[in-house]
Each structure stands twice: as C-alpha cells, then as structure tokens.
Amino acid sequence: MTEDAKDFGVLLPTRGVLVYADGKPPKVELNFQMAETAEMLGYDSVWVGDSITSKPRLEALTMMGAVGARTKRVKLGSAVLLSALRHPVHLAHVVATVDIISNGRVLLGIGAGRGDNPMYVKEHAAVGVPIKERADRMEEGIQILRALWTQPQVTSDGPYYPLEEVALEPKPIQQPVPLWISSNLVKRGLWRVAKFGDAWISNIPSPENYRECWSQIRHHADELGRDVSHMPRCLYISVNLNDTDAAMQEGDRFMMDYYGRPYASVSSQLLCVFGPPQKTVDAIRRYREEGANYFVVRFASRDQLGQLAKFTEEVLPHL
Image 1: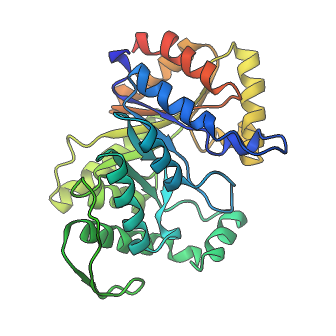
Image 2: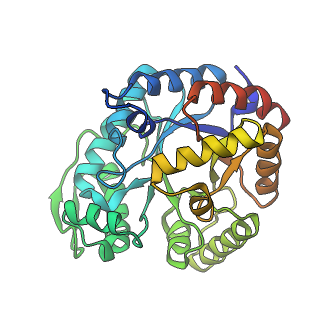
C-alpha cells in the first residue's frame, strides 16, 4: 500500500469489458479485480462511467453497489452519471442504498452531458427526456436529491418533478451524499459547479483552459456567497503508459473501439496522455500548477491490470 495514491482514483472498465468481449459474455470480474487491487495499493477511489444506450456498458449504480460489497475502504465514484436520464426520486433511492451498502463511501459525480451528437439525442429520447431539457432537469434534480436525502418529507413545485410530501427511506449514511459536478469550459456548467458542487470534475485537454475554468468557478462562487477554496478539483485523465509508438497505436484503437472516433478527434475534447510514464508525470504536474488536486485515471488499454501496476510503480512515486 502506497501513500502516493491518496489523491488518485481509478476508472473501472465497465464499458471496456463489453468492447473487448469478442462476442462472449463480458468479464465482469475484471472490474472487481481492478477495484480490489486499487484498494490494496492505497488508491482513494474507484469510478464507473455512465451511459444507457449511446455507449453500452454495465449499469453504473448497480456496479457501484457490487463493488461496494466487495471492498471496505475505497470510495465509489461515478465519472460521470448523466443524472437527467433518471427521475430524481428513483436516483435518490438507489444512491442511498449504495451508500448504505458501502458504509458511506459514495461520491456521486454528475453531469449534463453533451447535446451535439445524434446518439446522445436518441439516448435521452429513449427515456423520455428531450435533450434540450437536460440542464434544467439536472439542476432541479440536484435540489430534490439533497432534500430527499436529508428531510423527512419533500414537497416541490418544480416544472419537471413536482412532488407532494414524498418521504424517502432509507436515508444515506452521508448527509448528504457529496455531489461532484462536471463541466469543461461551459459558462452554465461552471456556474452549476459554483452553485451546487461539493467538488468539480473536468477532463479539459488544456492546462490554460483549466485555469480559466477554475477562475470562472471562483467568480461565480463569490457572486453566490460560497467559499470554494477547499473544493476538490478533480481531473479525469486517459493514459496509456507504453512506449510512444505502442501507446499511440493501442490508444488510437482504444478510442475507436470506445467512441467510434480516432485519437486525434477524441483528444481535442478530453485529456489523453499516451506515451512513456514521464509524459503522464509531466502532465499531472502541469495541471497541479493550475489547481487540480485530485485525479481519476482511465487506462486506454486492454491490459487494465498491467497499466494500473505500471502507473503505481512508475508514475505515482514521482508525484
């Protein structure tokens, strides 16, 4: 167990086990192996991605509950859950149950998602949510989640989720469950972080833009009368730690399999660092200079356990 990993989390391959199933049932147990190994090595958290139809994967909250039952210490995060795809009463109930199963270890990362791709439009339509309503629904839902987790009964007259004296049991152990809200350089999203967030998650592929985002969050927070100086600032980073040529080849295949788009396209929207371990060390140091203080690492590789071992042995000691 290493103290170096205390500000780091590991993304579990809840989509990867489908992508690389080769026509067979997905190897769900790889997620458990990754979580148990990360806990043993001293990582602070493990995380799951979320989508329903746009990018098929194991369901996020179900996996968090299963991992919570198999681990003792490591925190359980979602990076990030598209909360507008769920009714907040149902979501509050499931999250409270997972928090109880894990003895208070849930970090609920949530985001509005993107609206610029037909597959995301279809995904929202499939659950009865017009994609143009996703931000409004998310913000109304956040307030309902917190109320259901902490109040005996909740009445709400919001336009999307009107409630009359709704009581939720059981309550989560955490009062309330912390909300880690995602946004890149999007004005409303950054305001949302400042207004509602217990932490901020981003995957911004530019340290300079990262600095600008944090500056805007602090500005909004000042206007709202919130102190965000101690807010966790989480950077989601995709890495492949092989030598340069091998890392770029495997990383490009991973992105094509995962998103249906090549590395060149994906890396313009989210942070990818493919190459020898020192390249990842340098990138993390650079973002730390701009205020990032927590990191969720995704391994863009079939060899999830091998990349985790390499990150632990060849990256963490230099940070």
